[in-house]
Length: 114
Length: 111
Image (tube, rainbow over all chains, first blue to last red; front, top):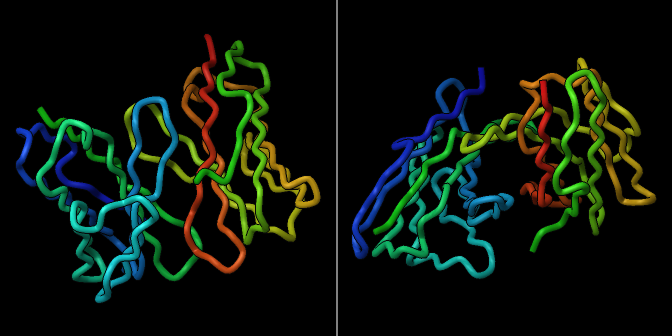
């Protein structure tokens, strides 16, 4: 149990385009989902926390207009990178938490912006 | 900002040896968790230890927590080549639910 999926697993896009990444909890209801970004050889940096049906809470320094987060249901959250630029290239990982304390992580999405 | 500092940053050992990784943090926590990440993949939850616990075991893993020193250690006994991965500690702050990750330790277990 407690499986989280992400789609797509990798994406290459041109500079200026928008990219949507989906995060789904497959076998549990996720009241809270989290989005992280990870650069090569570095740790995970929390970008934002989203609760179903409410606006996401962004960490300091993360542009909410650039990284749009929607948590429309208890099993789905989406992250849209708007007007992507090469510096947005990174590994994006989501996690989901149900009623317990444990966060379950998705397999990540590798984004490359050319 | 990062809450945790981990050491060593990289550790290389032979199969069968034990591996110890340390994590220090700055503020009061609710619990501390350890995760493993294989190269380019998602994170796997290993173990959670609460602030009122001092030691926890799970298979070949042993985690200790010293809240007075604000530090934790992860011991992997009888390591295997398949244990090669990056290991991260993450803290849940007292009063808050989000995870703050340490810098991680890159473990290499040579067969």
